[in-house]
Length: 452
Image (tube, rainbow, N blue to C red; front, side):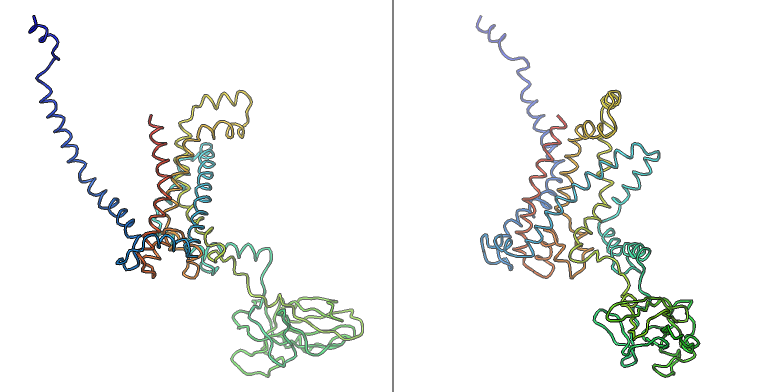
């Protein structure tokens, strides 16, 4: 009876746990063998460098003397590091926000474009360009010389179309030849002119190749006599091509300077103004009796508008963020567009049938439903922005490198770019790692929740 009960209550397949256990163990060993190369690479390329950097951050520049937390204290005493932290904060706030907003707007608009695929391809194409190549492209595009930088060429063209530019930025008067320079950049005649006088105003500093095409010789205009109630004169290039000629005298081959603004002043006030003709001649008519001072206004000699200093200290960080937007906007648009394609269309159609306009649908339905996707895109961009290095290092010129520096570039500059202080550089690397970890953890958790 007892033997029967024991036999009945014993677990089935009592002889199988041994083989099953060995099979399971063999499966674990095979899995570990497959994972081992990846674990070795992960340990060599990630875990070991992280642990080494943490340990190195507690030593001095030479790596021989233990200094404890001195590198971390020095990190926040260094003005360059504080500026890097400030610039990194600007990047983290501005770039992901703009990219997520642009990606959302473009993803919604692309749905209504006939050639949506081609449009997406054009916007996503910059992702195929390396940061190094993109940095070189934008370094050239932001060049301050309008002949090289395409942005300044456009800005100068628009400015000159509405404001115009001076005709003779390099022109100047000969010393002691009738014109006296003023602090504001203008010139005035050294002696006054009376009605009935003819005045010759000579300038130099203009090459014959820079003369306007309509310029003609000034000799005949200089010979004309003024009427009793007018002041007549000529503004000319006081230089004969090939040399020769007499300074202060209008020679036959000397060209007039057209388009020069000349003012007649009396008592310190401008009473008349005119512009020289193609032969440099001008005249003021119907003048009252008395003496007048002639003035060549400073606008005639103002240097040409050179555009905007995109890579100056004030604009270098926004300019680099602009280059970053050019690269990553397509990425944000494609991810958000994928989320947009997965939205339930019945909710959108129901809202339209209830009388909601497109803005209400976008604001109250599309954006809330896309919130998980927008969050993932934003956090991913935050992680990427914290590591930005290439664009800042390549686009920012040497003199403003410190004004544009972020934590990644500052870490490299301190460690290898002349500072040669790997202790402080390792501390900066640890700081950057600590800033990235919360965003990475948040993103991983969101992925896990989305999978569940």
